[in-house]
Length: 214
Image 1 (cartoon, rainbow, N blue to C red):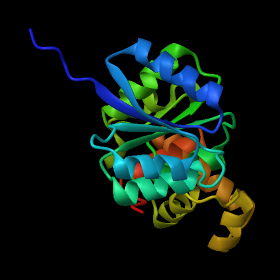
Image 2: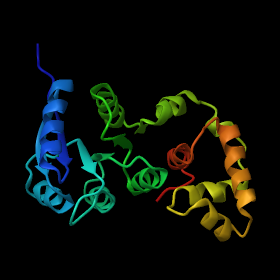
Image 3: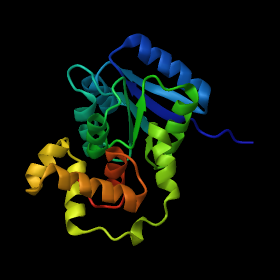
């Protein structure tokens, strides 16, 4: 019986204890090999440039010195588009999540997640799907098969595009030339139409369905 090849993973985190602990934990979760460990985005890209084997997945801390997770993700997707990216952070807020998704990451995990969540996140991202821990968000998105039949207006589409930026709702209202109340109306109507519950979910919808492509 042939043994399945190991899945190669790279980790970039400026906290050495966190990075080493994560590497050891991942190796217990499945057929994974940690082939690169880096303290920041510059180190990661340098090691990738010299590597004989590339990882299938890079797990990035967002707040790193020299080159943070946002910038590193952009450079990874430009140079190595087939490598999947998952963000890891102590800060679980919509702006961080949406910015990482917009830059090309397909997973976002809080550093307080348990091993089962980490395992689910790795498997989900490697399979080409989006993962985020908030209220089993991605599980609910995968179950919704009616997206293509939902009727979304031009203004709602414009609002969705702004949802994938780091603009606040007040700033989106200003961009669209409408009141904050109207913007909240677009948001709530999309929540209802798409059966979603957060701006993060709307951003993932926009990215997955091509409303936002870059």
